[in-house]
Amino acid sequence: GKTTSSIIVRPAEVTLVDGYHTFYDDRIVRLLDYKIFLYASEEILKKRRLERDPGIDKGYLNDFLFHEYSKYSGSFSRG
Figure 1: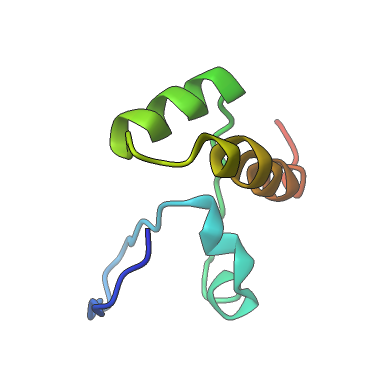
Figure 2 (figure 1 turned 90 degrees about the vertical axis):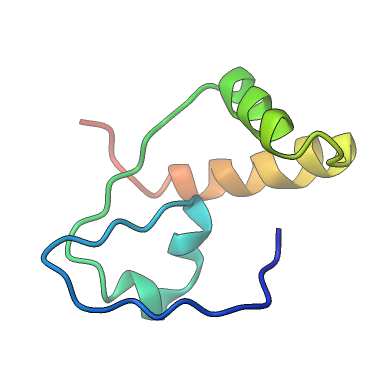
């Protein structure tokens, strides 16, 4: 979902940023020293998303979100 508020993050030794949309904005990507992408099956992703947002439009979930996830997940090597 979209947020209308801001969060101030103070410098720390380790800061975790979650979500594949993090990789959408190059300004954010350039600030990251390490990037870890956790792969999950489409079945697991759907289950987690539906638990978090049961009212989500299934067409949006299937046609858009998984396409975007696949686009970003392909940018990382598995190792």
